[in-house]
Length: 262
Image (cartoon, rainbow, N blue to C red; front, side, top):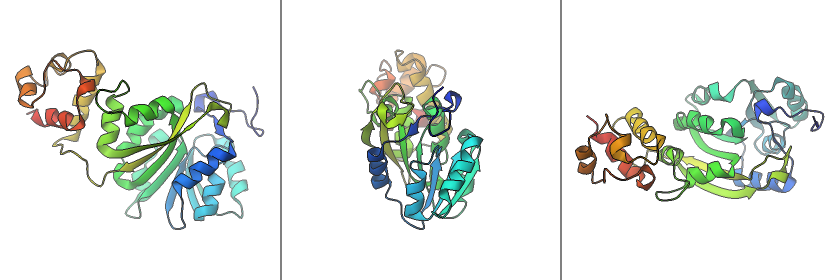
């Protein structure tokens, strides 16, 4: 297998290393890191973004699963700034504990596409400790995150991300910007956690359950997908057609359904 600067990209880690200086410059401009901010990079890889961020803010924390990459990063950072690397799986990482009672974290990263959706849900659960997030993701995932009711890409991910964050797709990234190039286009997105959710939800676990059940079989009507949770009459009492399908419902309508459950 072809090496990238002496390192063999590992498929099981979803490694596609960014190397395009033009894209790196656009990412740095979008993040606009400043000294004193608490930046955390997810998956620094070979350091394409790590080192410029470190120069900009003086101190950077990073979460890296591939143990072999860590000594290289530490060596590259020598004399540039303070780089603190946490070795571990980002899906298990406690960002809220890292933030503690201090300033909220700013997260940046080229997220592994093979775990992007569960990772996003893991981060959304800790959004109270996060100031903003800037991520490279598969273009299709960013489209789903930003989609509204009635759009083909509208999904469970759309509703749950938008409940927690304002979504700002920023720019596309072609496969050639990475080594090895992925088989899909990528996009760079900014997520800004809401100070408080845009809709009132009495029970967030119930809300998540309603959204998951509704989209679990998206061709089913709400009458069928929510059977056992809500009767047709209760759905209609929310001003929602029990014969509607989930991709037509807005965030406030999902909140109304969740709040209607006794």
